[in-house]
Amino acid sequence: MLTKDLAICIRAIDYSETSQIVTFFAKATGKIDAIAKGSKRPKSPFDGPIEVLSHGNVVFVDSAGEKLATLTEFQQQPDLINLCNNLFMLYACLFAAELLNNLTHDHDPHPELFDSFLEFLHNANEQHSANDQQRNILALLILFQLNLLNDIGLQPILSRCANCKTQYADLPSSKAKGRDTQYETYFSSSANGLICRDCEPGFPDKIMLSKEASACLSSLKRIPDAAEKTLKEIEKVLIHHLTELLGRKPTMAKHILDGT
Ligand SMILES: [Zn+2]
Image 1 (cartoon, protein in one colour):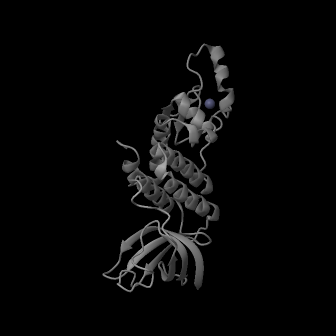
Image 2 (cartoon, helix red, strand yellow):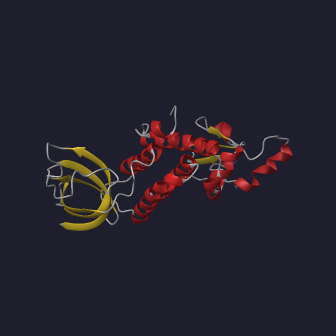
Image 3 (cartoon, helix red, strand yellow):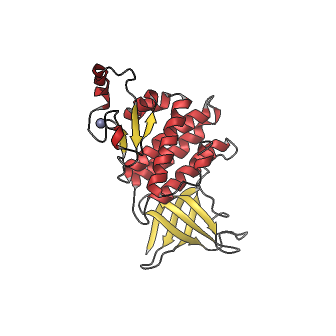
């Protein structure tokens, strides 16, 4: 079957002297693996070797029962990412691509997630002249990761305690019990969300969140304006959570946060 789609390359490996196996995240098709025959030849049918994060219109032939599709056309659009801009930006984009590759299934379309990924790449690249570009990129990356989890049906519960269901906004009422630290919550991967102070003893895997990180997670519109320190704390929790979901640490995680 001949399929036309709009796609972003999320993985590319050498297959032979002249060919590559590429993984595309395609808007209408979802993730596909395809062989790009001759992509590394001087007169490549695809305008040269295919690089991760390149995007454009693809045509591929898919036959039932075959794991690999055959790429027949790839009309590359101008690069979304200017690699000279910023190494952290590149790492963040590669990290997002890795997560898409590992958390979505072949031939399982996620058109909205495709748009969200394209927008993330675009917005991250736009930060090249911003003063606090690393902070901005981290904020974009956090929102993309939450979008991704949402789109694949693994949305963490962040507006209330995932266990007792008390709304985050109602948690300060525990002040009446004489507690001095308000609004702090915990994140538990096993509970898939925030856990309040009353429930935390039941979740040995919990991670304590500062009140700033708790407030941002319970109200995501705060994330673009959050301090870099808070964003790093949130990203650390997300990497921990993604590691639990994947059963191993994402390869690019160490480039996003030192010491992870
Ligand atoms: Zn609770």
